[in-house]
Amino acid sequence: MPLNRSEGDPEKRFEKTYFSLKNINESHDGQVVRIRARLQNKRAQGSKIVFLEMREIYDTLQVLVFQQDTSADMCKYAMKIPNESIVEVVGTLVKPEKEIAGCTIKLELGKLTELWTVNKSAPELPF
Picture 1 (tube, rainbow, N blue to C red):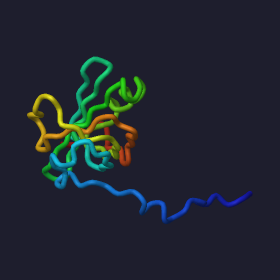
Picture 2: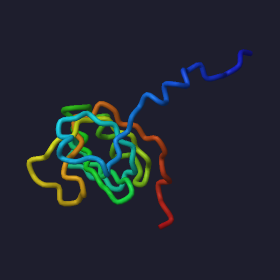
Picture 3: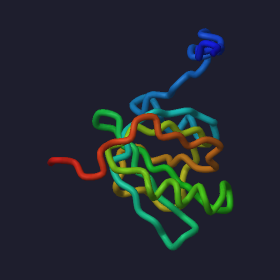
Picture 4: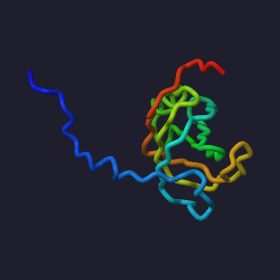
């Protein structure tokens, strides 16, 4: 039987650049960014909108998973991600009409093009 080995280019892992949440400010409005952070909390507004609150150390950012921009399956997937999982998201930073009260960063990440669960946490955490 043939060997099962990785045939991918090892240099591809260095092509991704991640934005640190502490560096995001209002000058990044309209910019497409890739972040990797912990899912602190999530809530759904009906079946068409899911709000993900991402945390990196002390900074938090709201991510908007909108069925119109992605799909109904993406909204269902986002709601199934357990809290404290590490998630990678690619989308556009936008300044919302209403100020976000629950997050330290006053921009939100919307118009998602990618949503990945990098490391899934246990469904029930011991604390």
